[in-house]
Length: 346
Image (cartoon, rainbow, N blue to C red; front, side, top):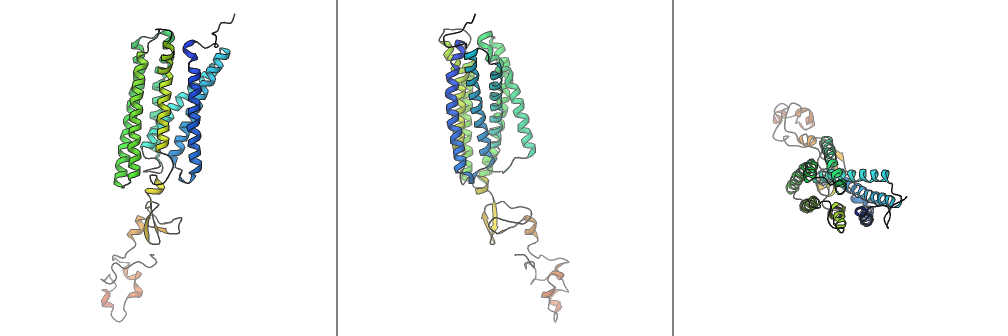
């Protein structure tokens, strides 16, 4: 005997998620295609931050499609355990990578620094890993809450680790944003400063929306009228997806590739034909830039001028007047030679 609803094997509290994730998949596809199109047409302005955002959006698209596929399979056959596991894994990966993306961007990746230090990368990996583990109890409880009717105490206790980790990661993100803003002010980079300020606003709005959604999920208790399944689906899945897609789209618009606010265009200086220009930052050794100019390093600057010493006589021996050697103080530095450029220093 096969028992199923008119629409298929999915229960009433689950069937509404099928069109929800179908619509979310369409929105994800639109913003992902738009982002990759922007990267293609502005390929001369790529930075690591743009690749990080692209990977985050792609994972979100994959997770939404996986949920739609799992629900469709379950509705058609009544059995889709493997598909559900894949969808859950992609959802967890999206959360982890989103946290890592926010931390990397807030720390100034591609804006105030070209790469993150290895120690910082390990810190991000460890923190996001702990964040992922902290979400497991809450996800399990909320997934089964309308079936097993857990008490409010159980729901709150399961959610506490996740809430604490989210607060900790948010504090790190805002601290990193403050540091990046201060760095932009020191460098008089108004556009970079504006981007970080707007990013802070987007994150605050997303966090406030997430807090409201979480409160509504707590209030959304099992039971109630038959129409409550639509409300349950919206608060458990729909609102969170809408919040995430909106925040991701705003970050994409904010960090779109272009001139002015990124490292290669704003924070590096080179020497070309003897003049300091914007392009590359000063290094400790001399290099040749792409325009044929030579880069001045800190060590080379120290040796650029003769300031006196025991080697001064040897370097400028050709300049000693043989008829009147006393003018040079028996080979020592004189007022005529101090400050003269070294031979070969161009």
